[in-house]
Image 1: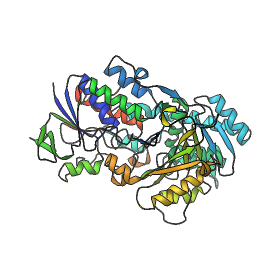
Image 2 (image 1 turned 180 degrees about the horizontal axis):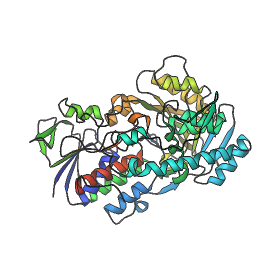
Image 3 (image 1 turned 135 degrees about the vertical axis):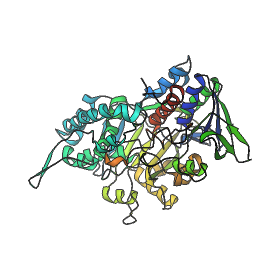
Image 4 (image 1 turned 60 degrees about the horizontal axis):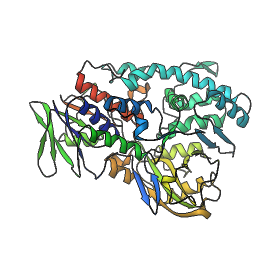
Length: 496
């Protein structure tokens, strides 16, 4: 039985802790804040409840596997999973609206043809077929296996199928998601639909590689899911599974340094100077924090995937509304920006024209989130630059955009509260509250995340800032990969 110290109680860290405990190890989690879940938090006020982190997720199989491998009770006995239908409702810049059924290709094709014109659905369906091919090429190396030692192969190869485009008598192949939309969809509203999946992770489609199209495919293929009571319930279930497997949690315990002995990770040092000895250390913190804990010495060596620079963050506005949720209201509505280029310039740090962002409006049909049937809990989210900007002004901007989805919003508004990038930084420790995107191939490796193993023996990394990147499903997979590397050793080849 090995002693394992886990830094942080985020979703990836808890997923690793539960699996390691089941394997017979003594696991202690040290969390500097007073609770678990990382960015998966919940705010309660006046009988209203809100998710301040992810509001929906895809790939529930990742957490079904976690619960299958760590106990008798399956995931569905610990939380109530709800498949959201329609998957999303879209309000485009010109006022066009369309609702997309959940995980139904024929339904989506029909809906797009009706709303956007004949042929729109076919073009979207053809794109999903190509995205599926890219997913099949990427699924194992970028989700289910430890990062390859020869990761450069993934950095050089674009897995999205080449669809030549002739321009000025020259044949070109799309290298970015924006080019995929412009050349294959040839319809600005369809392009906005595609790009919204990248924007949800703060990715600029003008620079994101073409294989970012898999983000749309994953939602289409595996559905969009909600946990009754809010996504915080998923974090609670994982935490309780850890407790059932005898994982120990120490809250309010900030790790200030890594302990090392004979060139190997040997535990963690806490703020009071005590050292908790361990045979392995699993760090669920951002790369900058981990290097600082390593007394300023980078834990990554030359030739390894460099840590991604902190990019976009997320602004969330929590709305308490008088009046019940209308019948037929979509759980998720995406209100697309009226000035796409200005939005992307602002997101990438260009301080030029101010632009209203693409806003996701979440209206869960969930009695647990409201004081009674005469009120509604609504959450607005948008990707924003990690640095700069006035949160209050941005929040007002989001509310104005959301009126396109909820026309009587201001008349019904009792109060609102803003969850800012600074709040995310406090909860997760990530620089400027940056939100990590999932790993993607190509683009010279700039979209990959560092391997879960490090050049310090016994030190492993987990969570959104290490392979396979951000998002609930990817965080859960990082926990499975770290547990496999510790239990089975360097010959571990990935989840089966």
